[in-house]
Image (cartoon, rainbow, N blue to C red; front, side, top):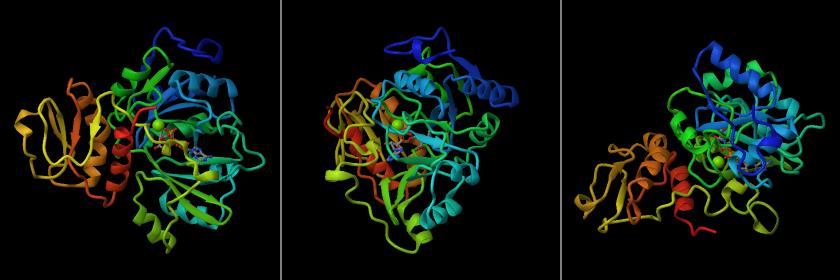
Length: 337
Ligand code: TXA
Ligand code: MG
């Protein structure tokens, strides 16, 4: 089992166990988590890398396995709304959103409850906590079996695109984590929407699986989306520029394909030069943003492997999940630090 002490720097575990999506797999995964180990598991958004939220040693091992800067706070996953209320203080806005969208692809950032078991390391020292009740049946079964909060960032090496299959997880983390619970491809394919409910306000921190207009319909008012933390620093560090980055440069809003490029299309229209492309993948030939979100990260991985000079991305309309897709692509295209 991977422990904090053995995963400082490049810690390599002997082998990462593959677990099937059945009662035995869930029981084994729960046992590993309860003992302080690291297990990747599917949620409806992307695969998460789970660790016991209350154990600083397990959380430290998780940061090490991902190679993630430790100032980035983690989302705490619980099986029920009442379990969430033990970890965080949900105000009226948070209760409304939780009632409408949990279980589901929404994370609420709220003040941490006095008795919260989420370790300070998992919260990166903040007085707030990010909470989510996922809707994937395997995730819910696992959380119920563990019986305590589980932190789970996306199960990729820090800076890589999020994994939507067990094979993606293995590519990034094989030998660095204890087990992968394989539940097939994740249905939504893009991370949860993050909303902060603090000081009576409701603010969008990250576009994701719940579209903005769905949130606004439930709240009955527009959501603040600009600004954020002190000095306008983003308070969801996932909102930092280059974050979801393939190694190949990404060229957005392409209206034609240049020689040597790979192409990421959306909708029925081809682009000039497409016949010369190294590889062409279409997120949704019918122009459906939900289908496109499910394909996004897997396609970025395949295009990245195509040895192209750049990945040219056709314009993608900002409707429904299009806003979240656009956000991830802009970060993939951002200057690398
Ligand atoms: O869909 C998802 O949200 C997936 C699945 C596995 O649940 N998880 C995920 O986690 O995307 P991660 O660690 O890749 O992104 C978590 C984001 C980060 O941008 C982090 O900064 C933000 O959540 N976050 C967590 N707690 C926060 C807090 N207390 N205040 C502000 N941002 C917070
Ligand atoms: Mg991530």
